[in-house]
Length: 322
Length: 258
Image 1 (spheres, each protein chain N blue to C red):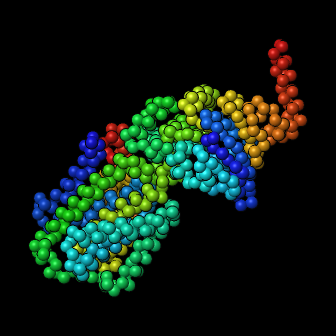
Image 2: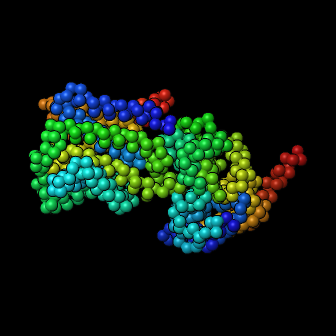
């Protein structure tokens, strides 16, 4: 298969691998924590990109899949005593199922109506979880410290979680590329450009949109389990954080919606910037305002994002960057 | 019979855009659909390919009742159309636009086969040199050709052409006419909405005329052109129209003599 050897695939893969390898070289736990946040953002942004970039549907509440997957996985580990691996799968499956059900209901909506509905879903899920005693209601759940022992102690467990995350994000990158280069992906892009015209050409848009939504939800569900397992604590406020949803949109738009590489660059750059802002006296309280301003500037001046902008500039880059 | 319409009616609230239209279409035929602006021609297309649900009546395509079938199912059955106001997928390349048509049309091809079909179709309509350009960057004439290529790549049995000649200059029109003739030679049945009379008269085997949503005439191009109701629909008062036509002939005669 020639298409698997294209630079459009290996450039993003190498980039993610390089980010992931950085803390292993230095061996420092703080570098690992920084890179965990960055790689997680890249994974979430790349997943969102399948819906936002390829299909053209803006989801403001995408973090609901991260939160719900995280909750279910956390519960399975904490209450049922599951190992991390099946819990991660459970998180992914739960998120995917939620997307499937939601897709049937709200993907009939288009444009701003769909976007608003996704916010509603996130807030509704948050309220629901806050009222479910078995998930710890408003106070959430905490992992017993002894859980980490079966993974060789906390230090080893944290590295294992980190490598699992890196592996999942590499898989997301491959999936993102495969979708973009497939017949399914072409159908999604046709929907993005003109949904009615796509239907007239034979694209069954309701079905394609739903699968795109499911695909974009499964990985955030899995990542959620890893994140909250690492933290050892989960509560509704941190699981269904609308802010993070908006930040994901900024990352995708910044790097280039509808490209494989874009969300990776966008996620990395945004997290780096956020790190700098949070440590500066001037910006630490208004870093979200900076995100908002950034989004505004991108939408106004480079709506195709960094990678999109580069692709428009030269045919040569267009062949190399996907 | 490829297509049969029986009593097709479409109402938007109190407005009847298409009223009780019935006709048959045989395989290999080119049917011209004409009528003044606002007569309901495009609405009729939209009723045939499922963009609008019909208020009353039935549409039968290849022997199956397809009334109110969704647009994608009509495409899968072998119906393709172009749009009067072009609808290119702007951020995709010209080639990818056509590949979408081939992938999701009547044959549901895989990507590889679709790419081959797309290249052949682009060659056929004369867009091959632009195949790697973004569809949004084409000019109007090229976008019309792209609409045509997308529709053809789906390997349709029936092709609905909605004013593919509008907005083209003389040279582009004759190019497009040649293309349509070649499509017919491949055995594709066509219904075309057209305002350029000499084109539609020359190409069509049969013409039907809509006025205020009603079918007012049907027949060979010559018969339809003579029909007083048709002349009235286009020009108003038939007697006045007749006088105008007489006058024109005299003037032609005068110049001919001189």
